[in-house]
Image 1 (cartoon, rainbow, N blue to C red):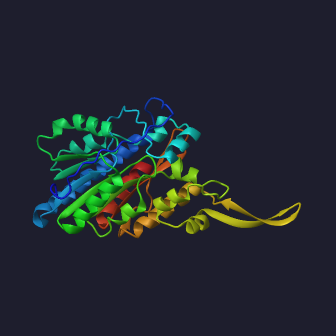
Image 2 (tube, rainbow, N blue to C red):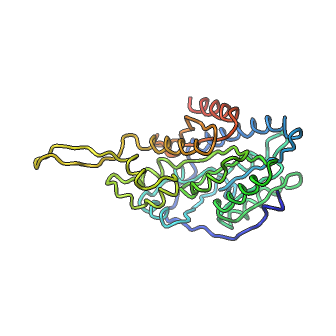
Image 3 (tube, rainbow, N blue to C red):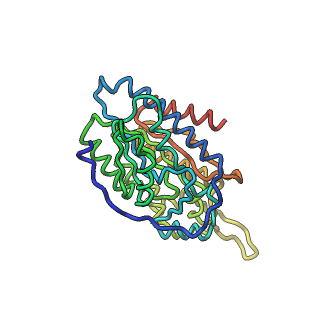
Length: 316
């Protein structure tokens, strides 16, 4: 694996304009705790069979960042995100994906993964993470990729399709919509457990404008893997209303659009994985508005039962 998946690219992300407030948001802890519990369970099960099946276990974090919980990360690698940040100057609890999973995963007190891949498009963040995780390098194989997550997912998927002994736990937790649906499709048929952060309320819902203009249709189709016509029919409904000038037809955005966004993405995940969490972990901001859904997908039924139990306890 280390020989077939070992290149490094230097690509820089952009900066956003809004200055975030100090770290906050209980949802970050909920997400970290849920994921750490799952990794513990995953390793316990996989360690029972890895020698017999000669499995090589991979941990893949597609948006690893610098690893600092206190980092005010100002990441926006597209004009779309920069536009949203300008229009909605979000506090850090809304725009900061958790950075702290790396240390938690590496600190789990049982036999860990054979390879740990930490990917981030921002070179400075990758260098900081490398420095932070240096104490773990004596007995673990850590690989840092300063590159686009979609390219690295493709590399990982190709390696797994070519080597049936590979099993991966993949974490994709971008703030925005950087993960293309075609990248998720590449993982189909592999021994992959995927945890993905879906920006349902904080990004996607805001792109689904009430006027049904879909000015960012290309981004939405890339994210969902559905064409523009499908998305219009799914998220908007036409109805006839009486006005002073007679009956007219209007188009309205569906009720509870954030829930509909999550439902559609879950349905899409089911086209690539045998089992998906029907009820993902809903993460709320300080105003009790749902901003993300954290979902798990796998081809192993037991994996989803464990994930669902963890989510249920967290959600209450």
